[in-house]
Image: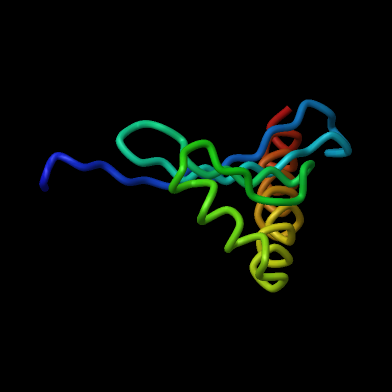
Amino acid sequence: ANGYYWSRWAKCIYSSHDFSDMVFIDNFIFNKDVYIQFNSTVGKYVGYTEHGVYNAQNFNNNPGQLQAESAQLDSFCKHNAEIRQSAIADKT
């Protein structure tokens, strides 16, 4: 609307069939630049701008938010990967 662009991209990255190497990444983006990122391997938020560092510190000080974000690895990533993998296996 005012020329500002905000988005949030969550993605799951893995290469093995047993999902042992799966990583959940949640990016907070402003004007096409990631300013905060949660990575399930790191287990906390990382800020990449002054505003992002400030908010990442606030998010990291909230154990409930960290726990909910970490739980996305199982509830979002692994859950959907299992569905997709079984759909592909059923077609072969």
